[in-house]
Image (cartoon, rainbow, N blue to C red; front, side, top):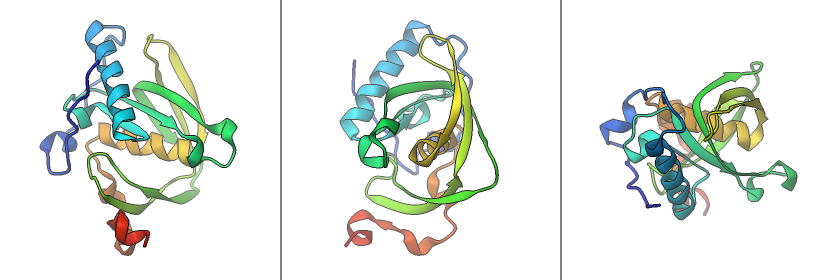
Length: 170
């Protein structure tokens, strides 16, 4: 496994639409997933999308840490979602405080759907699907945006809550 270089805001790779993964079990995809898991853990992130590590592929890794959920049973260990489909369930929106490994040191309040349905493939090529709420729904939407060339500042509706972490949380 290896730590991968994370593209930062301004790099054109972050504004391109990623391509579907044709064979999730291919050795190069399995290696990419392992390297992304290691990179996400090292960077202390909640998620990491392939375009963030200069790979225009429709996959991301993520987890739901216990400090981001009210009920510890809602925490999720690191996992991958390949060729994801994310669709809102209803119209309810919530405001999420978001940061991004590609935009270090900044955070903003971003509107996201409160509940989403997701489907895709796991690292074995098996179908995974479900519904997510709260932080789980937030991270799925954030990482899926990366696959479509969208960074969270493009979703901000109130720039009064966009700034450097140390200024916002003073």
